[in-house]
Length: 217
Image (cartoon, rainbow, N blue to C red):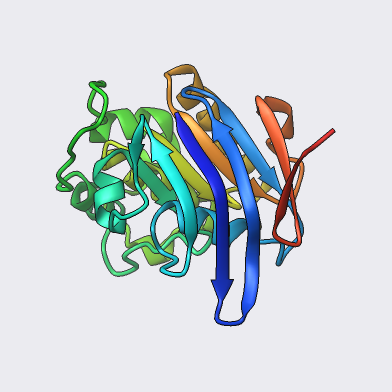
């Protein structure tokens, strides 16, 4: 499981997170909700080691990640999909997926390897556009590609920043269904989102308000 204890993060003199603590059990979906500016993205970035000023304790499967670089955290099985997706726009859909499969993993739980065929089964909409540049597919399809690419790194926990924001409703439903399937397969999901799209399938909902965490009703 993922444990975050007493996490404090600042941007220079401005503090963004205040003593944030929570646990994400293995195989569960925990939803972090909050308005823009509440600190949701900062929280996910901190877990991935992208916030050098972060102070606190982050453990994954009993191992401290606090002093590990982002690529080392990825090797441990954490997969991060930022809100802007960070796709290789000039590469094709297939190339975006295949480049992720070259990431070397270490110290991750023994799980079934996620192959290209598995990603296309999870996101069948991508199957017909494998040779299309990532820049020429819709926002919802790009989100599917970003999720698929992260899965190809053999991540066992997905950190998702606003995965359903600004996407056509039919594709939101497809992404939500895919996340439900992943959860059923034992993946651990931490989702930051300000809308209510995934609330019904969450095992726990936490509220982030001005950088402080609380249990949602």
